[in-house]
Amino acid sequence: GGDDRSNTAIITRTRTRTKRPSLYRVLLLNDDYTPMEFVVLVVERFFNKSHEDAYRIMMHVHHNGVGECGIFTYEVAETKVTQVMDFARKHQHPLQCVMEKK
Ligand code: TYC
Image (tube, rainbow, N blue to C red; front, side, top):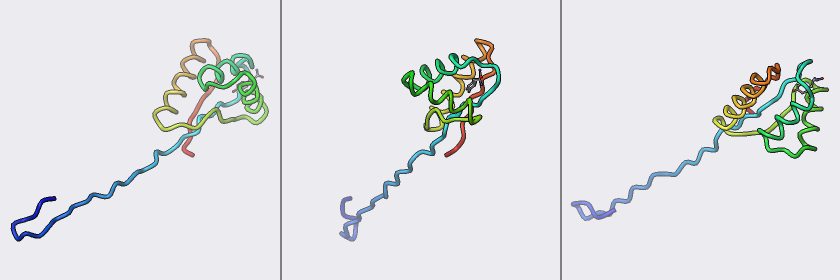
């Protein structure tokens, strides 16, 4: 900045600290009732996956009990979970979608 009263230059800098946001996995859980085609549609629609990738993810969940649909910041992950849970409820399927910190 400008000189002070004793004519000494004062420079004040504030360090810029950039914090990377925490990331969250969004997972689908298997159940015995939700139709496979419905899960594929969910993965395509809400996670922007190709039909082939959506089918692979659905089959992974079917065989392993749980599977990852994507990794997002907190607010985006929360929105995905809400969208999927609302869509499943609307169609009366018990499909469960959850998020977990990476
Ligand atoms: N297990 C279901 C069935 O046999 C299919 C399914 C797959 C359900 C993935 C949920 O997240 C899921 N119809």
